[in-house]
Length: 429
Image 1 (cartoon, rainbow, N blue to C red):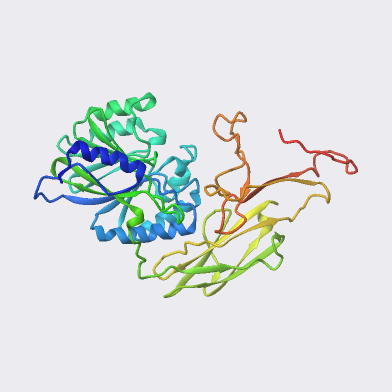
Image 2: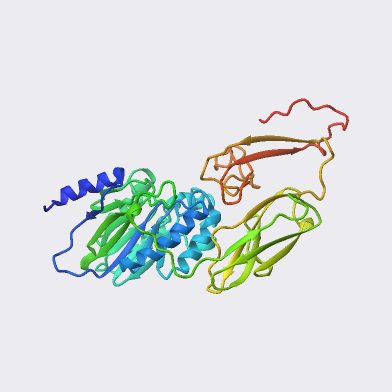
């Protein structure tokens, strides 16, 4: 049975809600071959090692679709920016070119662009592929002047596909962007994500498609990835394919594994502390590296059996996270990163002068120690910049659960309160 274009659009909208059958948007001319094919995804929300593993397999599997590249339209991670470097490394080693833009989960609603910029580089850019120009915009902090210059620099006979994370609505602050895009007839398509629901609309005469979410969670492996075909003149067909029906294939070269043992002194460290463990790979372990508080990776000593020593006197008396990873001979790093949370106590407060407020929040998947932060110097106490609710919290079970527990420690040893005073209550305000 032949479906009308209106019927296809209706099915397309339903797919966003039902995440059901594949949807073909637009129609090629019979017998015409596309200039190229590409894949697209949005809102992968990676926040744990199992999702990283599925993402790696996804990249390997969709190469069979004979696509030239993958577009990732933001929210690569789920408020877990420590995974962004891994996402970039896995993409670079996949053999499939990946063009990505930042989403609000990747840059904290534009408040922390360094989360995304450090591994991925540019927050906005353009590229060309086989006569088609792609503009990759940063929707959380519209670089309006750059967009105008980028569009003006494209020859009028060259089709443009405009990509960003937030769907442009044409209202409020986005009105200027919509008006700018409408000035260029060669803008043939707008692609976006964010809403987790498929939508196919028109903005100022330009077709605007919002991609449904593509979730790699083992519990919620749902949503769609998309296969696009680009034809002469910038005509595009876009097919939504259910992720749940895609059999993910593992690359032949396995990933290295690494194990981390607790230091001899346990969770409380002082002076010099030595960490030890083992690593393995199906070919060869090239190096083992460690990281303190999500900082840069530093070389450890040894490979199959390894160690590293930390001078804790160079760290603050506080809780710190210590992560390790193994790197194999092909440059692949382990995706499960054993993590220990330890208390550095070189100058502990006087006995009996520490009070703790502690609260368990088991079962919440989506935040880690990096996403809820201390106040920075210069942040306004009013919270107008979004930092009012920041607390310090930690990953207690390495790789097993996020945001399982947090606490605030009050050190009153230097407060001026008499040493023999009895403190009956501490109030948070």
